[in-house]
Length: 159
Image (cartoon, rainbow, N blue to C red; front, side, top):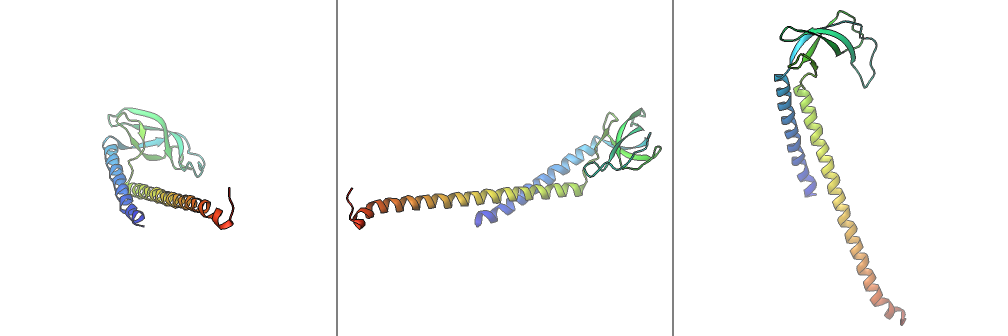
């Protein structure tokens, strides 16, 4: 019981560490990227599906140095050619993912903490089961030894 309770603050600490690492990574990513406006060169088309809520579309944009770029950007479905969308660009002016938000990092930390808690609880249960099984085997061996000593006198058998 104590080990199961001790796992909770450990999981909380691990989740906190994950959150802090994610926040630092987001800050570093935000420092090395920037927002820009891209103009779609074609219609975005229909919905990409549950696993792909955004669709790639050919677009043009200008980098921080003023150079023109063209390539695919991920946008919401159903947008039409000529629509302006906000994109994140890396230092070379190429599209990159937006930095994770504080909320996304909180969710990441909470999920990491819960994952660690579940894994620790499963390890504790496995250890508990193993100890019970070893105790049962020891009791069985003790009973067998006692029975092999007592049974010949009880049954008056001579081997």
